[in-house]
Image 1 (spheres, rainbow, N blue to C red):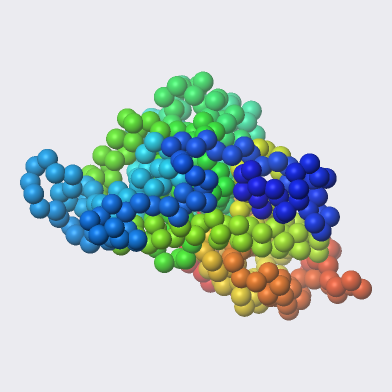
Image 2: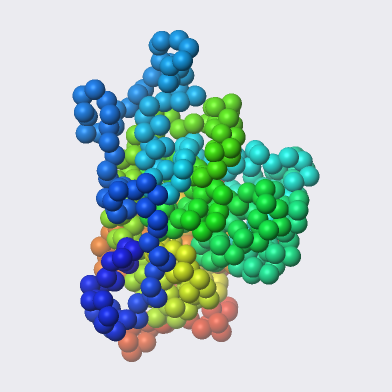
Length: 444
Ligand SMILES: Cc1ncc(COP(=O)(O)O)c(C=O)c1O
Ligand SMILES: N[C@@H](CCSC[C@H](N)C(=O)O)C(=O)O
């Protein structure tokens, strides 16, 4: 994939819109983000953090201290209220997220908790019908315990969203691409409509699936961009973190108040890990999405129904590329049979069976059994979340190795029929009658 302003896959500007292998390339990526205080291109800014300690250390020091001496008036007194390592990370992130202010907390769910604490009983939330399971769980809790009214709408349909917006809409909560159905949501149109319905409505976008390297919701009219730093920002599955980016000072102060009051600010060592991870975000993301694109094409060419915004078959391909600079590295596909999907997931070696994504390692999962198991089966059915859906989170490994691993898993699982040219996904009739295999027991 190409970063903004780059020439895609080495093709000279003005030449036919094809890459060197003759494949169609995505349309021009979304315009490069405003510089918002940035001196350099994003890939440079990611690695460029100035440490201002007295020894000019190359790596930001970890201020592993709960307290700071000195009394009233000093910048730091207590790490729950502020810590130099955390502040350094927050300033770095603000630049990267094109935000006036960034705040970091102990997990992505912690970030959503901070954001939703501004809601009062009777407030309405308009959100999607395909959401990360944990987000759905927290919204259910707010509905049951705090009298918040939550409307789950197909947010790919702006008219349906508009119909759900009222002057009582206090928050619009969007994911794009959604997890795990990879639906694309028009951030700008929905933000405009939400603010027209209620100028005070807070439009919050979960940017976890792309990271600020590929999408900047604040530039598209959102009031809040938040994400699980556990994923792409950290990149190594060794830290849990949540990130909140805002432009409005009052909203920023309200969020900071909650972080200080509840004590969910990111710990110094975890802040340091996240700072380190962010430095390699551009190279990881470029490699991961190049691999993901090839794998999505591989599966589609072999007859699977694949959901990935880098594929022209994606129903919102044009919308995605109008607001994002890349397709990301999470894709999902269906086999038509839960048993077949289970066998595929059990048969890969390089794709580890695990929740989460954004890590340098490739992962495979069945969302209905794992990340989205907390959504009850009836609701999953109502929201058309296929029980057999497999989610792939593509890492930075060698592409040929990944494709070989998937191929052997598809063959071993009996999910494909051998043809003269290799293999092809089973037809619906062939899938029908597939016997159920052992049932995976996963957490949720
Ligand atoms: C889209 C999305 N948002 C938020 C979260 C929550 O992040 P965390 O696990 O860091 O709490 C996750 C995953 O957990 C996610 O997939
Ligand atoms: N047991 C966890 C599941 C975490 S799922 C993590 C990630 N968002 C994903 O989509 O894989 C829970 O109940 O929250």
